[in-house]
Length: 69
Image 1 (tube, rainbow, N blue to C red):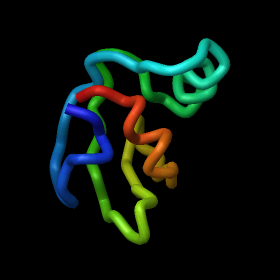
Image 2: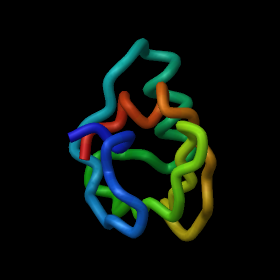
Image 3: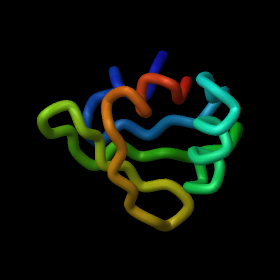
Image 4: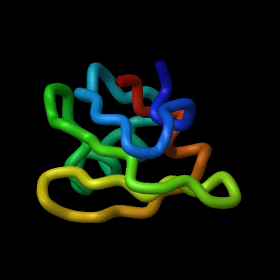
């Protein structure tokens, strides 16, 4: 399931990351690597605020759709 479809408060583990190589590299630098725990904090206007590796990160719906949990 893409992270964009997860509800607020949901905790999931990252299974894979799709998209172009530069997109995958960008997300991996933010901490979205397979096996990492991601918690959806809130969703507003399509943007998603998540907690990953003890940091809060805001990503767009398009980026969240590339992260499979």
